[in-house]
Amino acid sequence: MKILLLRAAPRKSGATNAFADAFAKGLRAAGADFCDVNLCSKKIAPCAGCYKCCAFDSECPIDDDMSGLLQLVRASDVVACFSPVYFYGMSSVLKAFFDRCFPLIGKSSHTPFCADTKASGSLMKRLLAFSVASGRISTFEPLSKHYEFIARGLGMSLTNIRRGEAVYFANLKHNSKRVKKIFDSVEKLGREIALGEVSDDTVASIELPIAPSDEAFFARAKIYWNILRS
Ligand SMILES: Cc1cc2nc3c(=O)[nH]c(=O)nc-3n(C[C@H](O)[C@H](O)[C@H](O)COP(=O)(O)O)c2cc1C
Image (cartoon, rainbow, N blue to C red):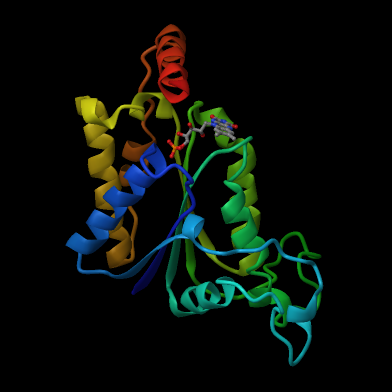
């Protein structure tokens, strides 16, 4: 089982990278064969929409880090993406990465994305999408749908994980017991992925709501945004 961990969070010391660290710890503990890549430090130009990658004997003409990343995707059984939620979507570096995955389906499908219910590609891999947002669960609706269609387009199965209320992860040095439990569950997720099966309990314990009330959430959110702005 080969796992490709893709970090797509610009803030090095933010919550998303902290979760990716916990996931990597779990992978390591299970002896997984994995590659840990920070997409933010890679050169990934936007797709030019030239369709050269669909042509019979042609590759993507853009000369950057994406050809190496595509090789890693091809060689992996699981692609695990960790991204913050930005404007109800994924971070821009991850979007650029997925657009540049077009060569993975370009030649294999006569009509990519034209059939709503059919996969365009047939990668037969698992996409693990781990998203982190300051807002609560409804924030993830558009992105979860997007991941569903991306996985379908590429012919991958999807494990979608949404960790909202990042307002509770602003200062990771002052971890509460609840926050620690969530990080332990992310580590467990790493161990489970390495063994090929993710339990519903693990996903539920990662996604567990934290705020006891709307008032508590908004009070905490105020503190969070002040910390980020300072
Ligand atoms: C450009 C930008 C857009 C954002 N959009 C959203 C959003 O749509 N919904 C939300 O809940 N949080 C949003 N946030 C907050 C981040 O998702 C949140 O702070 C997350 O924890 C960032 O991850 P990080 O701690 O790894 O940087 C946004 C933050 C930025 C910088």
